[in-house]
Amino acid sequence: MSDNPKTTLTDGSPVTDDHREIDPATGMQKGYVVLSDEERAKGFVRPLRQTYRHVGKRVCGQRREIEAVEMLPGKIAHVCCKPLEHDGPCTVFQQVSASELARIERYGCLDGCGGTTTMHQALAETYARKPDFYSGTYCAHCRDHFPVGAEGEFVWYGTEEKVGT
Image (cartoon, rainbow, N blue to C red; front, side, top):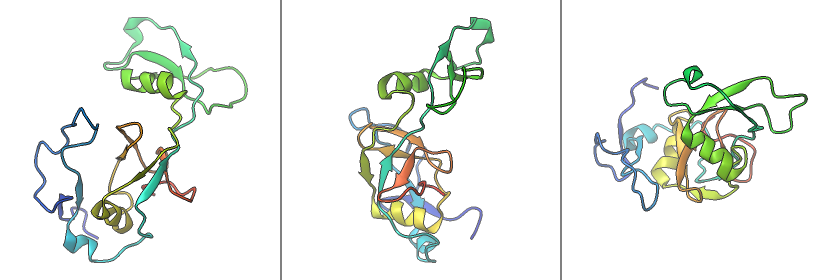
């Protein structure tokens, strides 16, 4: 498989510079990139699945006060990102962004909402052809995008297999 496969948007049109613009009403991008029809026609390396579940990333979420001079640009808080049910005290704190902190507060320690999302056929075929093509995907219930892959937040519906692996 080529390192730079041909791509289009889901409707078959060319990829535009503004395709990642978010529609505030839906939280979805203006357009989504997929492998071209020709690339997808080369065959799939994974089963074709269209529905996934948002399981999230279970972390402790305990916060620690810090000095502003300690903060990295774009980060706002130190949060314990160990698994939710870790043993012992929180000793390692990770700097998180405002959006990550809002998720911890809104969804309870970065847990996913548990909702399912069904994607466009061309997106599903792209995952089946090249599972690691995407770095994130959309949750229709949260109306936002979150990571996929081994450390991602989604599993294929009816399985425990991570989306993007």
